[in-house]
Length: 379
Image (cartoon, rainbow, N blue to C red; front, top):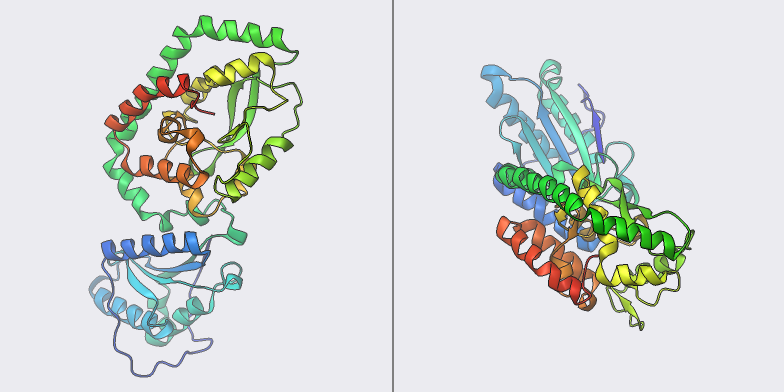
C-alpha cells in the first residue's frame, strides 16, 4: 500500500531536535539489501514495515548539495536512530525504513514520522525548495495482510531484487517464453489425437462438459482460468478439498490422513472412474498447454494455487507467486510430491525461482516423465 501527498511549507508540530550526530546514509546497494532483509523478517514475524520515499522532483541545479543536506538533516531529526536511512536513487530519491510499525499506522493517513519529516523540511528550506519534494509512504504488508495493486508483496519498492534480477535475466525470460510458445503449440498439435480420445472418454464416462475451468492465482497474484479435463461429477462440492487443503497448509503437511497426497484426495468420492485414470497418469493436465500458449503459465514453474488456498498463506508463502510464473511441472513435482510438506514445497519453488536456468529447466523436463509414471505428476 502506498500513500502519496504533498509537503507542507510550515511546521504543524515540530519534533524536538537537540544535538544529534548526522546518521550515515546507506548507498543504494546496501540500502536495498537492508530492505530485503527486513522484508524477509516481516514475512515470518508478521511485523509491519513502512518505507518513506522522499523524492526531488526536479534538478535543483547548483543548490543540489545544499538542498539534499537539509533534507537529510530533516529526516535525521524526525526519525529514530534505529530507522534505516539510505538512497533509493542517488541524488533523486531518499528512503527511510521503519520496522515494527503499529498496525494502526500501516493504513489510513500518513504516519507521524512522515508528518514530522515534512515539518522539518518546512523549517529548514524556503517554500519554493520544499515544493520540489514529494513524499510517498509505502506499507508492508497491506491492509489486513492483503495485497492491493500497489501494496504488499507486489509493491516493487519492497522487491528490489526482482527488478535487478529482471535486468540480468532478460534474455532467459524471453527465450523461455519462446520455448513455451513453440513447445505448447507443438504438443497441442502432436497430441491432438490423444486429446480427442480423452475428450470422448470423459463425455462417455459421465454427463457434463469435457473441460473443467478453475480459477487459479498466477504470477504477481493475478487470477486466471486454468483448464483441465473434467475428472469429477458435474457440480461436485469443493468443500471436501477446501477443508483438506486448508488443514494441510495450516499444519505444514502434518495431515496424516490415509489416501491423501499433496493437494489431492486419492480416494475422493467425487472423482469419476475415467477421472481416476486421468489423474493417475496426469493426463488431465494436458489442457494447461493452452494456458501456456496464452502466457498465463509456463511449461516449468510453481504450481498455481486456488483462491481458497491463498487465504491460508503466510506472507513468505506468497513469494512463490511473485518470483516466477506458474508451470505445468516444476521442481517440487519431480522432487517427491507425496513426501513433501507444504512449507517444503514453497521452499522448493523459491529455490527454483531464485536459481532458475536453462539447465535446471532441462533437468526438470527430463525428470517429469518418471515423476508422472511413479504417480508424482503435477496436480
